[in-house]
Amino acid sequence: MQNKKVIILLGPPGSGKGTQVRLLQEKFSFDCIGSGKMLRARAKTKDFTGKKIAQYVDKGLRVPTPIIFNMWMNRMAEIEKDTKNKGFIIDGSPREVFEAEMLGMALEWYVWDKTKKVVYLKLSEKEIKQRLLNRRMCQKCGRLIPYLVGFKDLKKCDKCGGSLIKRADDTEEGVKERLAWFKREVLPVVSYYKKKGKVIEINGNQSIKKVFNDILKELK
Image 1 (tube, rainbow, N blue to C red):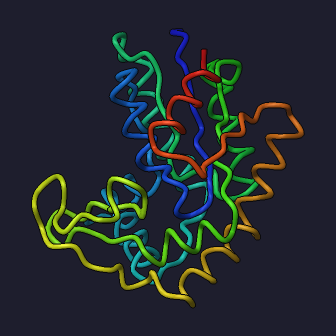
Image 2 (image 1 turned 180 degrees about the vertical axis):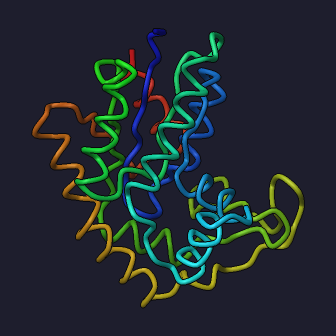
């Protein structure tokens, strides 16, 4: 049984989780277990489960945790066999306390629970709203362009040169709904991990580089 490092990255919408996941992957050559990505891939299959997941995803419904748990276990089994793999990042999960408990069971099964680090990017509600209402997305590659110094003045996508547009759900009402969901579902997960004394809290109201450097300091 290999000793893998595990990072669970939590934060409100607009906190830059995706950017930090990418930077951590580049730094440590870590894999990433992204529930959203796995669900979208599974939804493309034509069997019963794939079609069922597609129905949930299309309607914006949450796929039942046991289904996600099964995908975690399958992916972790692949990672466990990979002798070159040093660790992985959990992105997009857990989204409720029950999911956090199930994830804990999965990590314990592979004896990875003790190497787990929970990183929480903390951001004020005012900053969350400002970022979400002003960020843009590349129409060509889908890259999100954050409303931060070095990005907010871009006229084209810095990766592919595509045109920048506003996401359809980045509206006052859309942001309000996502904040309500975060408070209702994800904040209890943060509290759950805090009670276990396993949360590294990072000030998300900083530059991308400063946030990343703070995470690296805490992971040492």
